[in-house]
Structures are given as structure tokens and as C-alpha cells.
Amino acid sequence: MEIAFTKMHGAGNDFVMIENLDGSIELTSEQVAALCDRRFGIGADGLILLNPPVEPNTDATMIYYNADGGRVDMCGNGARCFTSFAIQNEVGDGQSVSFQTDAGPMKALANDGIFTINMTPVHSIALDQSLSTRNGEFQYDFMNTGVEHVVVFRPDVDQVDIVPEGSAIRYHDNFPDGTNANFAEIQDDGVIKVRTYERGVEDETLACGTGVVAVAIAANLTREQPTPVSMLVRGGDVLSVDFDRQGDAISNITLTGPAKVVYTGVVEV
Image (cartoon, rainbow, N blue to C red; front, side, top):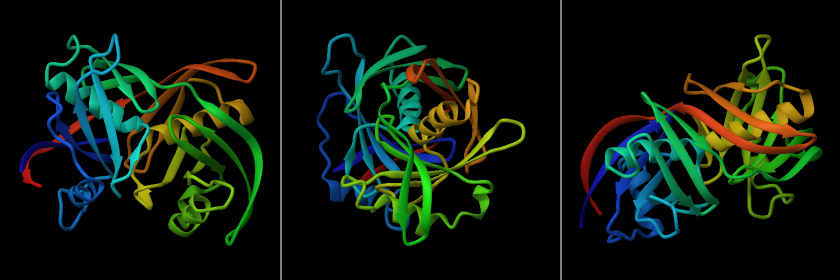
């Protein structure tokens, strides 16, 4: 079977995008992993299907797979790419798209190549936790911003040996379903530098949308970082996270940043 695809990235977080509005394409986890393989496939951090709507008042459904072929609830950078890709395929009104994810409903706005995503509600927040790994003990914050994230603040994130440190957190017994691991540094100018070890990719990615949202919320709750929060990701782009806060309650979370087409093609599956 031949499948048309578009390769896209959001701040360096890259995806294979497939239009499946007739619902005819079903991929196994092995096929997804093969397509995302950077040596033998197209190469990507994940694969996204643009599926037909299944819920009322939505334009489409976003199905997201990590590079290992595992289906997960949501991806923030992927949601921006999904919005751009949906608009390219005449889904929505040309400026906005409402869509369903496994994490819940979402809505996105487009403005000259910049996309603002209304994120799903954050939950399972646990602040100022302690964790012991083979790399030592440290304090962390945990929350689910669509998927699970650990946030660790460090004075110099460029010095983090992210694969061993990130994997030690990702596979820790404290997280039976696994977690993503984010290391963050609040710079003197208020911009937060973020590096993410991503579950399902099992390596550092150049950006993680749900990860920067988790970092921004943790920085606001534990360090009174004002909103909107500017987030410098490994790919070099600056993403913006905004939300409302009443006490410790967080609502109306948005993630804003670019989404770009790299190339299009046809692949045999």
C-alpha cells in the first residue's frame, strides 16, 4: 500500500502527517515505528493521522503515535502541526480547527504560520517531590498536561547528561506507566530554557509542547514565574505558554508557536 504523507515540525519536534479523512488507513505499531525510523524510514519523533470527526462540534480527530509505535493521548507540538495540516486539507474554517484527541477536545487558532492551541486541562499535579535514582537524589514537580511529565529545575541545563538522567526518571518505579522528563533553567531574562527526554522516543527531542507547558506551570506555582512564559527549546525556537491561575488552580492553558512543512512524498507500507 502506498500512502501520501507530509513531513512537518514544530520547533524541531518532527512528525509524519497522514491525511485519513475517509478513515481507510489503519497502521500497526510496527508500521508506525518503521515509518518513524530515521535510518530505514521517513524519520520522525511521531506520526499523526488526520482522521474524520467522531465527536459532536469537532472538525476532525487527531490520532498520535510516538516513534516507537505506541499510541499516546496527545502531543502539543504535534497539535500545532495537526492544525496547520488540517487547514491545508480544508478542515475547519481556514483560521481555526476544533478536534478531538485521546486526552480530550482541543481548539486551535492560526495566525500567519503561528498556531495557538487551547490545551486540555492539567491534572495530577504533585509539587516539591523527592526522587532517588542512580544519578542521585533531587526535587521534582509532576503533572499531566495531556501526558505525564516530571519537571526538574537546574542551574545549567546544558550540563545535564540527558539520556542517562532522563531515562532513569522515565523508568523509575514511581511512574508505573512511565513519564517524560524535563530539565529547566530560568535565565536572568525570565526566559526558561528546557530540555526534554521523551518517552516513546527514548531520547532527547528538540521540543516537547506538553513538556514546556508542564515546566511553565511548575515555574509559576513554585517560583512565581509570571505569565505568559517564554520557553526556549532545544531546536532554538521560543514558544509561549499562557494560562489563568486562581490560587493553585490552573485553567485556560494555551501553547503558541510555529508549525512548518519540511517536504511531502509517498511511501510504501
